[in-house]
Image (spheres, rainbow, N blue to C red):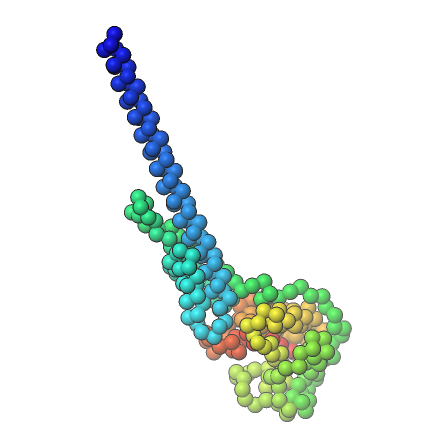
Length: 262
């Protein structure tokens, strides 16, 4: 009798130990899974923040600035910066968070993100408001053709911007790329300074979008602003400086709206 009870107690102990082991293993598994998920979330969040920070520095004038700030932001958020790529109007990054403890042999969790500058940095919807077309015509003594002159005057009266250049009395003979519409009086530049101020950037996009909305009556050939160019056949798309890649804000039209007319 006692022997059978002893066997029963021994069997029960084994089952208790087995159950305890299963529970322990389950707890460890849940803990490891939670650690892995946390690492992935941290890598993803760090990538998002780093990409946004880099996008805000795209046109700092220093080609290395976007990725430097991305690395700093990633580090502050517990991740290492992997890859960092910047282009005309975007920043793309990858981040890594190393696994710890029992997961260390698995390497790291990765995050990936791509960002563009803030919502104020882009064209806006506008309705046409300018009637009729004044026609082409020859360049006048002020160095502008009738269409270019009309846009200059309307920008002054409509948007109260007076810093407008890109033309010279009698016509410009230097200061622009070969074949530029500035030499024939078919183009003006509306300066938007300081070019990194969000309020001024938004104003610049209003002006550029107004030109696009009224392109028929204004005789617009194309508009360039903040590394983007608008043409009637393609709409807004990435601008490429004819002289090759550059981070110069003026050459990339970051500090002015350029408009050319027919």
